[in-house]
Image 1 (tube, rainbow, N blue to C red):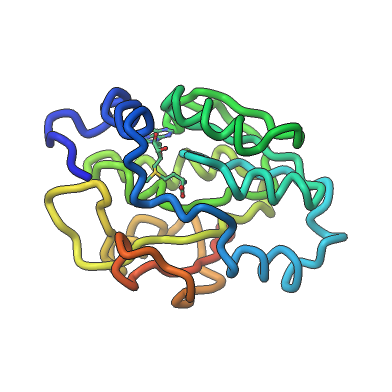
Image 2 (image 1 turned 135 degrees about the horizontal axis):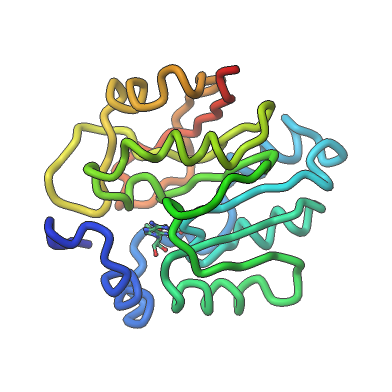
Amino acid sequence: MSVDADQPRSVEFWDNLYKEGRLPWDCGGVPERLRRFIELENGEGRVAGKSVLIPGCGSAYEAAYLASRGMQVTAIDVSEPAIERARSIVGDLPVRFEVSDFFELVQNDFDFVYERAFLCAIHPSFRDRFPAVLRSLLKDEGKLFGFFFVDTERKSGPPYPIAEVNLSTLMTGLFQQEADESTEDQLAVFEGKERWQVWSKVL
Ligand SMILES: C[S@@+](CC[C@H](N)C(=O)[O-])C[C@H]1O[C@@H](n2cnc3c(N)ncnc32)[C@H](O)[C@@H]1O
């Protein structure tokens, strides 16, 4: 994957990848660590009925899974072809889809936000707004959970990994980290550097 530095958020860039079926980040299913979090650590009864936002949902396998667990799922992506693909994967399950830019979403009160390969898809020059937008989308006791590509920063991408210290600086004051682990079923594109993390709002 590569994108011109002067077009860091080109919708066309993403549209073309989906149209060409070039999706090296696509894991083709639901990560095992997410299943454990939902089914064991949260308990099915506890997540049923809760709302979850999936920004940059891509193929949205997880949207289907979370909806099948009784969650109210909103899945957004800036790319129309991505949403078309996601709709065909999710089928009849009750997922609310939107073609939207995460950075333009209006305030909400989601219980959860699920992250995978979204932050690392954003050009580092736009990252600063990520935690503030997230905060405005989550209710006070809301949580962000998911997978973060944590590694030495690089100029070209996506993906743009984020250095551990920079992720910590980015979130400081707005979110506190509750979990940080390596994960088992990683794709080559993440080079073994994908971390499972849970963050809660600082109140
Ligand atoms: C690397 S893909 C990851 C897709 C999916 N989360 C997954 O794990 O397979 C990044 C996704 O973010 C979307 N995206 C990029 N910038 C976005 C933005 N500002 N708002 C919403 N979606 C965006 C892209 O269209 C793409 O589908």
